[in-house]
Length: 494
Image 1: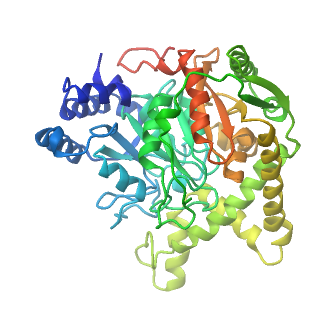
Image 2 (image 1 turned 135 degrees about the vertical axis):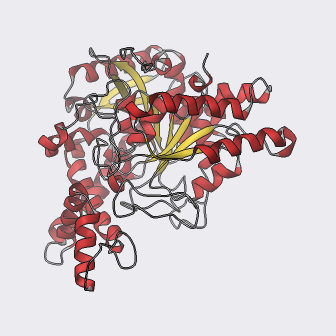
């Protein structure tokens, strides 16, 4: 078996036994990147020389020279809105084309501390605003299952790189489903932890009350191992939760007996694909056969979740992106002769059309004459949506639903019908609005061979229970071991 095909836990076992070296593992993944990256386009910045040097350094030290963890010597990638000192952090934008941070995001610092090996920075929708992966200033990322279809967004490169075996895991960010949706489209595991469980320090913010960093992995066991490494209190993040974290790998128990699962009627009725709906219902029936209690419920406020999310995220985004003016931060145009011209041209030329659209929507919501009718009303509805979810989760352990209402669509479709594509987020944005944990896992394929994802959403800080339920499903199916075929001349197939 090629080493790049291994999961984290499989590779860690071989490293522990000294059956492979960190260098051999890293070289195998670099070879894989060389072979497929021209068709995937997952990376904005590759840091191959530094990665190889790190691997060789670990091998030279030997096990006695460092503290061994499950992620030691494991090659990975970071979404390019997570700050890395000495390495560009562009947010896939012209605005930050030459930005090299002088400090590390907390998650990157934690992964460096356990000697994980960074291969590079991964593509995204510009400033993490988008749900298809089509708005990067640098490169178009393709879905490894079908190069004519989107990988999802905004963590497009983070999902595609894992699915294509170009990294063993990645970190993405999730503001309104931006980890879970591309994970679903690419047939891998993607988790949005509880808000505050993972530090956001060093993340270039889009919407601060919604953003969360989380793992994208090949299976649920790997997800637990990565969460162990990145979760925990951080004094540098004012929204970080100061509470102990369990060993998430200890939650991986193959048993759902007595666990109560709620199936929201509105989420299933919103499916644009009958195949998605039927496959997730089939998965729910499997849980019932394994001893879980499965019941249909109603979440009447679901229809408001997407417009509420768009209003609030755009308002926060407009505020956060106001700093990029070409004077203090960001792209500065040549030939500008006044502060006004610098400001105007910097933002006009530095932001893409999608980002500018959301800034304008956010500024409209925050306008003093419209604040009560837009932002304040959306904020109140957000509270009501959270209360509705909390009420259901007071009776049930987990809300089960499709991750997305359809499988990956072709490039260009979202530009033709932007509002229609916003509606597909109905199942994923509620977790962000309420700060709840949610995970997407593969649960099947449609008739064209594209992956289907199932979402599990739980109470705040029930991340371990989500991993347990997801792990149980995974142990009784084989969807997670299927990978797209990307060797030259092969046709993608399940």
